[in-house]
Structures are given as C-alpha cells and as structure tokens.
Length: 330
Ligand code: DON
Image (cartoon, rainbow, N blue to C red; front, side):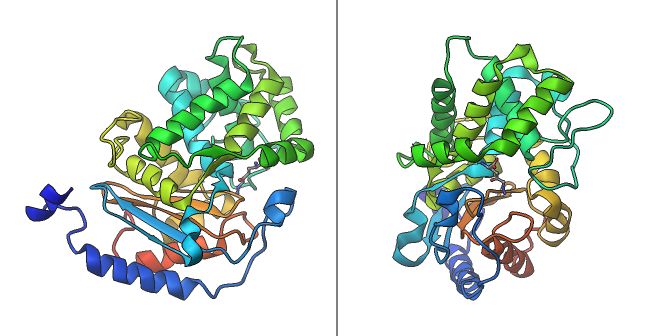
C-alpha cells in the first residue's frame, strides 16, 4: 500500500487524523457499563465484561487496533457473526435461486431466536436469525458428500475465515463453547425440527449434522484484529486487502451485505440502519463486524449486550463514528 501512499491514492489519505479521532471515540465509549453478558451459554456469562477492543482495516490494508492489554488479540467466538459467511459460502456454491427456495431475504422484526417462519412459504425470514442460519448451515452441509462429518464442514468454513482474515493464524475453534452450546441448544433443536417438519430440509440433509455445523460455525474463535480484516475483505467486494485473493465474488458479497444491512442487527436492524446506515453483524459473544463499503471494515469486541443481543459499546461506537465521519451509506 505504500506505493499508493506516495501517489496519494489511499482511500483514507489522512490516516493519522483518522486514527486520532477513532482513539478518541474508543475512549469515550469505554466507560459505558450498560447491558449484560449473554447468560444462556455458561462460557459467555463468565467472560470478562470489561474487555473492549477495536480494530480497523482499510481496503488498502492500512490497519490500527486499540484496547488495554491488547484486548484486540483476545480470542473470542464468532457466534452470530459467523452467519453471513456461512450464508455466503452456501450462496456461492448453490446460487441465488436455490437459496431463495429455502431462505427468504426479508427483515424478521423478531428476536434472533424466534421460532416463527414465514407463514406462507414456511421459510426462515432471513439468514441472520437463527432459523435462517441453521438452514444455511443445512444447505452448506447438503452440498458436501454424505461421508463428510460436521467437523470437516466446519473446518472448511474455518478455512474460508482464514482467507477472509488475510491468512490469520489466530482462527481457532472453541470445543468448550461447542459442547456448552450443544448441551443448552434446546431452542435451536426446536427450530431445526420445526424446519424439517414444515418444509423439509434441502436434499434431506441430516438434521443433527445441520445443527452441529451451525453450532460449530458459532464456536469458531477469532480475534478482533483478524475480524477487522474479514470486514475489510467484504468492504472490498470480496478481495482480501492483505493477500489480494478473491475469497468471494463481488455478486455474493453484494447480496450478503444487503442482507445484513436489513437483518444483521436483528430487531434493532431498523434503528441501526437509520442511525448508523452500514451493513453490520453482531454476535452474543459481544463481537461486532461493520462494513463501510469501498472504504474500510472494522470490528469491536465488548461482551455486555443490550436487550436485542447487540454489544452496547459496539453500537455506541458506531453511532459516534457516523456522527463524525460521513460514512452512513445515505
Ligand atoms: O444460536 C445461538 O444461540 C448462538 N450460538 C448464536 C446466537 C447469536 O450470536 C445471536 N446474536 N446476537
């Protein structure tokens, strides 16, 4: 990127000022104590609520990370931040028509764990709520050979995350989270049975494999620093700014970003679209991935969540960013 820097072609030419501003907003958000850690998964409940991290990566590959004790290098699970990538992988493989048949792209206006399906078509409303993400995991699994087990499929997803993050070696897997989720996933089991009972499953994929792939994707571990590169890859139309590799075609990225713009923040998605106006995806671990199309991507991590399941500090940071920089897409 330094060639671009010398010819003043960088998408954020005044990087130093930008970083100073980001530091200021990062510090202003830190005192917020509202919200609670997710409590329905023991390992998330016991997470350190004080952790606060921010990483930014521009589409030119300029990067900055902030947080006490290098909180941006702390591995945490993706949880629902995994959903757009699982969806993108399934979409890339199967195409729009097949995806449409099984998952709609309409805002749900319901909590992320709702059992409701579209009453007319029996499809999940979108791929960002659990029902749609479980279905996307099923679609992905249905494209693998029947001999592939859930771990093979999740390893494949992990490999895609690795590429999205610029071959970052920190992409891990939390066995403890996976086991702990499995023990408590009664609602997700109910969703899976409901999906099978209503419209059936794509290619009659095994219900347990589908659920294990979904929970496995949620249990992939990442750092805030790595997640910001994945966000930048999506901001850059699917080409990783660090490696230059095309991870997804631009057409897949366009659909996925439109989908998370409308649905990624669950039943706060409408307010988030009005106030922040950027495609974003949150997870119950406290992770948040935000895309500023064609400019930069960023990730935040702070475990305390609001009542909609979104990180309080993460959302507050986004609001401040939009107040000081004109990045709202409208
Ligand atoms: O399905 C679940 O319960 C979780 N593993 C993921 C949900 C999630 O992250 C929702 N996000 N806010």
